[in-house]
Length: 514
Image (cartoon, rainbow, N blue to C red):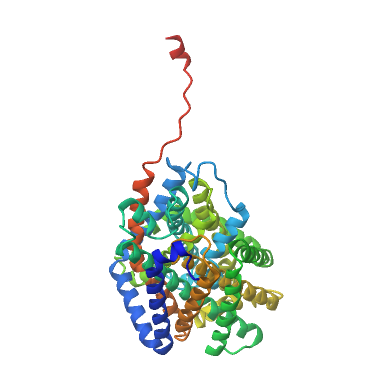
């Protein structure tokens, strides 16, 4: 059976409606890719231009809320019972949340994004030392504290209600617990369906970009032609592997793949650092930390209204922020699932600060090396990046010894990241459509795996990175309003938590005498 007896009968509506909608959109993409493209771009374009101020303030608010939860009066609260301890070791926990949260995105944009901003930074001339410095600040803004704070808030709300208040791991649970949804009424079902669609769209868009990068890498390394047929072969192989992994459960498939991911990623990172311009990379990393943290307040509220650069903001910063919102329910529920037993302070530091520092080191290594080539090494890499962004990483490897081995390792890493992301996403969507079951059935995971593959195929047929990004953020726009209600419910509920007893202060010598 797809659902257990005491779960499916209560939540079948979310499953049926979500499957029908996702299947219809996937078929739409396959049969009429241009029509789907225009619709997705129209919807996202309207939201990015009309609500730019709202999304920027909202995402910055997540960062402020994360800091408050980590160092405020609720930091001691454990995500579970007071005597519970973490289910996974810290290393396994960090590996799984990082693989789910960023995955192939760092490989796709690690070289390309700093180069793009170096060539055309907003409001200043490109190809200058100042442009290179600004390029790293902007890149870290897009991939740093804001991104991980969005994940942290989404995960914290679900983890708190699931493990502290013993509610199902559903998008609607905080809303139902605080405001009430009689018999899981239409509003709760709507919230869960919107969450499912946000996960599916965000995951399909990201998988599309990853598959296009694998296809580009196969062309660079082995001369494989970049055709739709090759893309579909990659998709079929990826789907087969992540369905096999999904059937093994959380403690085996996802955990093992995440450890493999991190091992290969760290090995490639260290090779780039020590085989590349080592001193330049480390200097960029240290400088980026200072620049980023000194500029974060300014950049967190910057929309460029006086320079007519709103298109730049919507095309880069806001697209990223809404993209992270799209992944919020997926990564949030997954991180919540693996974070039981941790305190809020430990949770926020592990989910926000540590991945941010790793991402900054990653971009300093890959983006810094690309900037070094452009500024001091003869150039030429930027032209390759502009020609095809999916080839940027492999173009960088040609400047290193053993470039074919590096490219081969990168292809393996990207592919495993895709499998891990799809595996995690399938696991989460299956939870969301089985009344929050922490161990959903294999049959349900297979159904959702096929649906994700179908929608990804529809986006692949458009052959456009722009469309992939648009689809990735389409589901996030309505989900954002659900998330706001979740946060309100969370803050109202956590205020009723009992404070730990404060130790009595010993009497001062003055009071003792008097």
